[in-house]
Image (tube, rainbow, N blue to C red; front, side, top):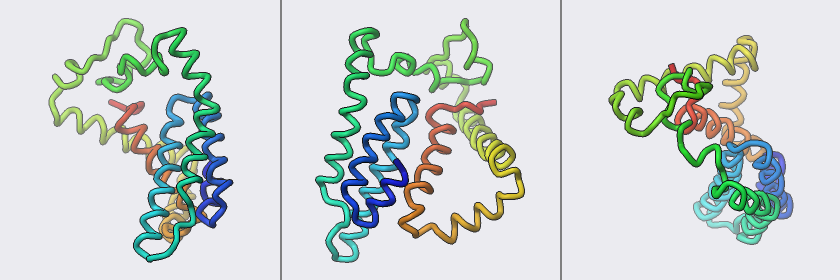
Length: 192
């Protein structure tokens, strides 16, 4: 999906539209694939803003974005219909919001804990911010150790900085940032 979005930034509207199909397939596999769709939608917005600022025609037309959304809905629509019929929600695991209100990691696998908004807010803002910063630090540390084997971290940072304006890497960089922030703020897997 990200590769097709990058092709779209080179003027291939059909590739960009096809990325919606793959986001739909990813959404069947994981609830958090909406972050991937968000990155691809942001690619479209960034390209339109760039074109507007440069006073040039946009490489991605509205038809590409509509096609992307339509292909996404072709894949995910039947699944959402099934979820609504069976469970009354398009995402039964996320409908309670319990994953958003974790105050401790042990609550993630607990069958007795009922994380609620009230309990979450009762911690106070310092504790909430601390847990999210700990989560961000944990996410970055896990990536640095497990994915980059520590040695690759400087090369990744240098490469990302050098290619920050590259259309070939824009979808990947956006998705990396959105996924990291999502794992930290939206569904905090690394809370205390």
